[in-house]
Image (cartoon, rainbow, N blue to C red; front, side, top):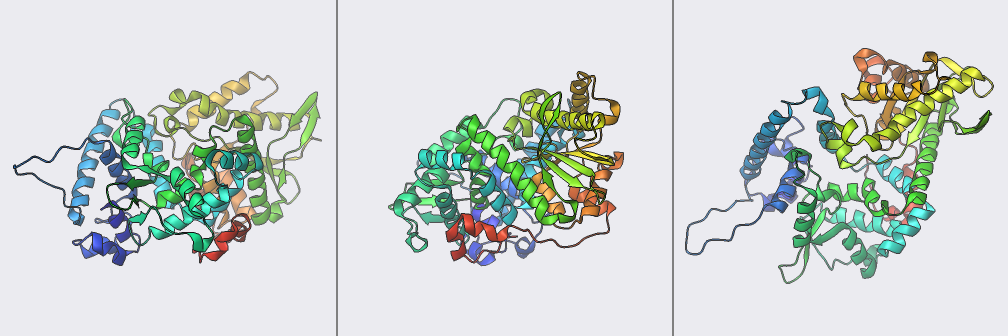
Length: 488
């Protein structure tokens, strides 16, 4: 039922018909915000709750009720009940916190689904950032297939699920050069028998004090479930988009145990990706990367520099590839509950202010524009629509107070921006309009806004800059060229 509703509202009406014999015609054309549109994040929550709900035995020789999963009305009823539960739980939370304090949770739950998981930018970025030599070696030695093989298997599964909710566990992928051994290794990463999926879901959900809407989703790690009750094993995928999420951003799950050397490599590759992106789309800003300089001792500069026409640094970026934990995303009080995680983001602001201080004391290090500002550029959306920005900056100020050489004039405006937000902004920005938008983010009326939204508000520039690395995916994954890919 969940697969069919997702298909129905993703432009695959005919594929959904065999599984939904009854649905309003408005449901097939509904868009986000329309009455008959079912939010994908609600479907994800429904599947997770189904997995952790104990099943009642069918009564013998007695009347019983069953859920008719062939009707759109059924999913509508389930979603409405879920909404009532979430509203009741939110009401309890709002007795302790203001609605602004918990807006970040809503954003982390919804924005990914609104943006979508399938794009050239997300795909190439994940393959680049997570595709270093150390990471690739760890992935293959741990899982028995290469990152490229895992990606192409995941893509094949995703394509097959566009037509039907289940595929044969023995599906033949030899036409795209995938052996049964490689296919099975990919299945082991992306799926598990249904009883196992239920067990894993119970182990990560029902966190005390966290509402139903903001529990961890097992589908982010295991988006497919094996039904072994039939003659041939069938692998089900209620929300195929999460396969794409798993094989891009979700590569984190496969590398998290690889040790600090791998995470340093990921950080380095994220910095290089940001610089390469800027050079491709902002050539007039003469993007430059990190360098070493001496001021008493040897320091590393920030990671990214964008320059004004006079050659002085206008935007200075510090890149942070640290992943957000479930607590950092969904805690009501994330700066306290995920203090150590947020300390890395606070450190980014401090590093920028310290660099501004060094350049003030020794202008020979780097010429800084009078209107320059800093950007902490993150792999994850750490401060998306967050009401905790002022508190985080206050903590950064407290850290800066410990260094007597960081004066007030060195504490220039800092934008905390996710790479997703920057990529989207660069699709429509010029060098000048980007600088204008970054400068505007420090104004009170735009506090907490996405950079993209600020750019739309303050700039008349709306040019179309295609993603510059689309063709490179085929260089990393040669089999990619066999598919007619229509990514956005």
